[in-house]
Image 1 (tube, rainbow, N blue to C red):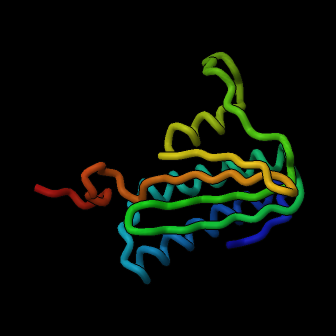
Image 2 (cartoon, rainbow, N blue to C red):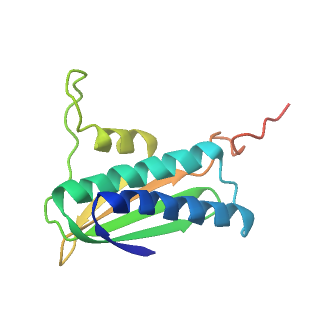
Length: 139
C-alpha cells in the first residue's frame, strides 16, 4: 500500500509504485509478470489516479495484491461520486480512461465507503489465457 495527496505529480509516483511492486513480485517471489502486464498495470493506475485528481482531489490510498496470475488494484479516495463510463463516441475528445480500464481488466468494482469510495480492479499478470507468460514463446 502507498498513500498519496493526489495531485498531478503523484500520478507518476503511483505508476512507479506499481512498477516496483511488480518487479519485486517477479524477482523476489517468482510470479510470472509479463511485460504487457507491467505496462497495462501502470496505465490502469494512471487512469484511476487521474480520475481521483479530477473528481476527488486529496488523500488517496493505493493497494496492490498479486497472486499466481492475478493483480488486484484497489484505490480509495474521499470523493462520493461513483465513476461511470460514457457511451462510446469516437468523436469525443478525452474521458476515455474508464473505458480503457474496463477493456483491459477482468473485473471492475466500485463501492461507497463511509468516507468516499473504493475502486477495485483485477487484471491478468499473463498474456496468454493458457498460462504462458508473455515473452516466453513455446515451440
